[in-house]
Amino acid sequence: MPRLSYTPGDYDLRVGRSATGLGIFAEQDIPKGACLYEYVGPQLTKEQEEKSKSKYLFEINARKTIDGTVRWNTARYINHSCRPNCEPNIYKARVYIHAKRKIKAGEELNYDYGKAYFDQFLKDICACPKCAEKKAAKRAAASRVRAKTVTKAAKKTSATKKAKKTKKRA
Ligand SMILES: [Zn+2]
Image 1 (tube, rainbow, N blue to C red):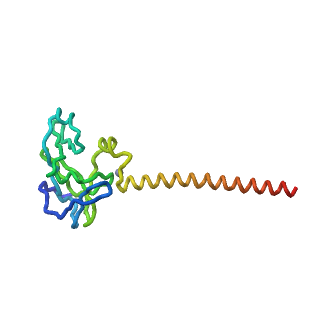
Image 2: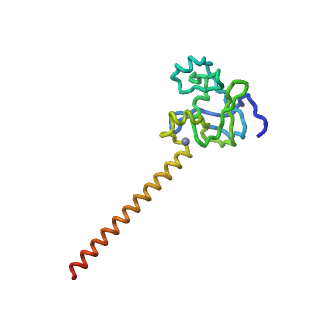
């Protein structure tokens, strides 16, 4: 990847309805590596961070955490995905959101919130394509097991019927 810029570019992005509430959508094609947002908000001390109930905390390093709840932090609308098209990058103790790959007009922006956040808040409800595929595969496997059980039961029934018929004849 070429050297990243850390000045958010003037891209056509909008806040809109997404599967999980609000999200940010590209209104134009965006090249890989483009700087889209700085993730902004007041800086919290460790003590404030521990007391905070914000779900928009972004830990930059051991000493610095940003609370991205504030309204002017548009990047807070970017949803999580386990297969994201964006990624946060820390530069000079600030956070920037870059396009991880080329993004097509109409696509929703997302980035990986990280394992700790995922395990705490998203594990069972993540609706990203990767988790949807996993859930579909699980469902398919479960229904295959059910189908097998049903077939076995059906065979058993017909076998019993046959046995009864044979008995009658005898
Ligand atoms: Zn997921």
